[in-house]
Amino acid sequence: MGIVVSSLIAVIGFLGIFDLNSDYANISVLLVIASEWVYLFLLLANLPNLFLLLWLQKHPQAAELEIRICFANLAVNAILSGFTLYSTQEGSVYFFELVLMMMVICVFPYYKAGHGLSLVALSLLMISAIILVNHVQVAWQDTYDLFLFYVIGQACIVLRRYWFRQSSWYNYILHQANGTLFVSSRTDKLTGLYNRLALREYFPNYGKQEVGVAMIDLDDFKRFNANYGHAYGDLVLTRLGRYLQKDWMNEHLRCYRYGGDEILIIASGLEDGDFVKKLQIFQAEYAKLNQQLEEPATLSIGYATGAVANEEELRKMIQLADNYLYQAKRQGKNQVVGAEKK
Image (cartoon, rainbow, N blue to C red):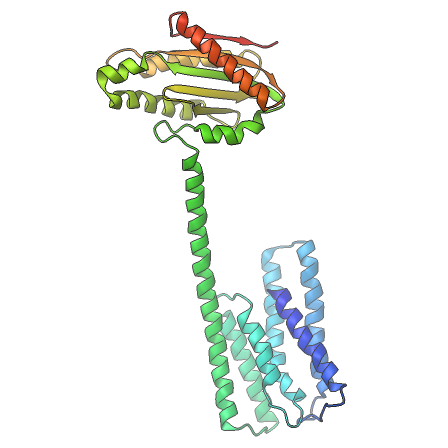
């Protein structure tokens, strides 16, 4: 906002100089300081600051430095707002340019508690001092209106800070809610693994690299549900999901709940043979994981590895792993069957 404030007050300075050189300009009420100097002070205080802030946008420095530069410029402008009394021409109102400058100072920037009040007080003290030193006769109505303006200006600062903090809080809550919704919409609630939507979105990231694909199916899962109820089957799936999340999933290996009791694993960045070894370990660990259940739980795995150039090749590899999975089922279940491309 420092750029906005400096720009607008510089415009006031430029227009003031233009006005003084017009045929309609009148003589100043106070001749202590020439009107030209008042407007030149506005330009000298704000044009260098404007260029400095524009330079800082292209060459970022510490945020605290930029904040201090902006506040120092605002303080200078609050002082200069009082000096605009010297630019008042005969037949004009005393405080018009002061009101313009303080509107810019009060409305646009965001202030920490107390900082805005200090600028309002600085401007009020300056205009009061100039009025007293120069024995300016100000009508009671103008004095009242000026005081009321400063009160409203301070109220604008307080309200803007309040609304800004409220909107920032609401934006934070909305961002958190959107983040939670994004994750939950791409996560299977029962297992905690990624779902098919997450798979579709991440699909393009697997292209042009070596990957390992495994299709996993829990053996006789329908019989578990039929004999012991769906709560028993859900328990098996939940334990499986927790195990995969804790010991398997990372930035190079993602697990998806592909169907009812089917799990898809896609890994990248593995050395030759590592993927198959991990699958064999997983098969053994899964049996240990469920050994305390009412009857043993086993699983069958079909896998394929190799380089994929695009999404279509990855789909073919998933289909190949699925074919090996059904081969493992036909060979008696509780098998790891697949092939590695050389």
